[in-house]
Length: 338
Image (tube, helix red, strand yellow):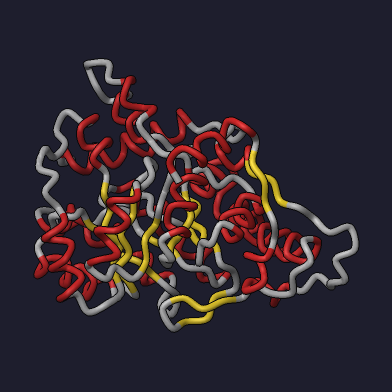
């Protein structure tokens, strides 16, 4: 097994070890005002939407997790089957390994085999050459390309990259790749200056991916001989980084610590066009198998439709009319930096 494949397996194991389904985050300090008389009817069709010119049954999707190892082959196969059954989008983990280890293609392509007509999003690092990125998009028949930005993870990783001059290559990827581009943090949030840089180079969609869910500094510290746990608190909370994107008028995805359908609703109220869920769905699959994950996602869709109704809305377009308020610790941060 190569070093990169071994790292992929370690990431899966450590994500499971550190997973805490009751972990508190910024969503808990955000509250929505609910009308006691909503005058609505629960309708599962109220949460249907479109993504990359394809119809999907819900605005939430399976976000980037894995690929590039034997175990990730099985994970991606199961996740893709569930995505196909429930007609939701799926993003793969970083496929940059394919540049040097093309034999790992099956662990990614299995997702397209299991979901030939659904939305599949490829993922690469920000220094991936355009030619390689386009090859990955073509081979996976991807509907979009996600570029992950992850400085804190890289600096936490003994073998991680140390070159963070990324914006020019991201610009070239945006100019030359033939599918839509998503730029995604990996759980530490995106600040205003970075959002503006991405806005200036016409990135279509930004996944703000704030802190509150999987912490890749914690995961990398679990692989590290030296304690770098001080890096674990460097992230911007998901609610904060979403508010920053909303203020700039960007189209964005909310992810980072999404644990339940109410968190999904809050992400949409914050202005997110879609909401990404990774480790919560991964752990459901690891615990209860493919059928368990299918039942969970099916339940999330019904519950999200119920939430849309009890908050007085008839469709996703109306959600940003919902009023919200914040606990004082989070409101203090908002007042200082948003």
